Length: 328
DNA sequence: CTTACGGCCTGGGTGC
DNA sequence: TGCACCCAGGCCGTAA
Image (cartoon, rainbow, N blue to C red):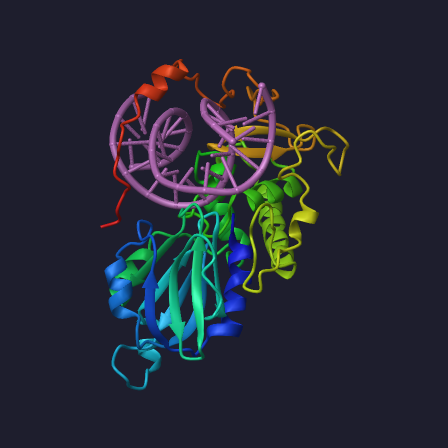
């Protein structure tokens, strides 16, 4: 589940290992998670990797112009890119070309140092795309502020002007780019804010504290090379260490480090959310029930009552072979 | 208009 | 050994 700190860790690893390398050839495996596989095969050979940028949860491998010539500063911003999103299980690293492909390797880029840049992704929730400068510009418009750069005032304004739940806003990439479930829960715990609170109902003070908590946590997580819950690995194949510092995420049933109450889990904004029911008081009407019985009814949802639907009914509704969504 | 929910993609892990 | 089920991030269709 790579979020900003994990992607930053990978981007730094790539800068050490593939910056300046020229791509000689491309070999693709399964391509259903790529925007336009033919474009990747067609445009990448011969291009040099001139920059590795992180933008929210994705990386942009900026490519030299197709025709050999000196790039000016102006062209720098307009450079085409290979967009890499790791989804949940994506990994990318430069490898000895002689090494056999690992399972679930779906792209391999032969480099001019004899190595290969390989992308593996068991679930294929990730994304690879060749983006021309024009497509890239359009792509970047969809995203909100960088959480590490956004100023407290701007952050407060964005959060307090909307009526959705704070957790949903933290996860919304068009509000903040790069925050996912782990760092949303960790920063809410630190700021003592319940995930189901509405942004508009938070005090200026609370939002300011949240801003500070979010930045501090992200910085610390980057220093520790991210969180490895299941399978995150950096470009050296090493796990991060920030999971050892989680205070809320994944701690259901364990004691809150601050007050000793039992950390609970509830579905907020469609995602598992971990919080301390004592330090992070819920909004009125929020049912802080244990939401995960073994055979217990479905999970209690927060908000409006849910339409009843039997499991079999729900199953039969699924269309047999819905085509995977294509971005074009 | 804004916001929220349910479904879908996939395959590893888990529990029966 | 098998198998049903859950879960994850992002996106979309639908509904309120």
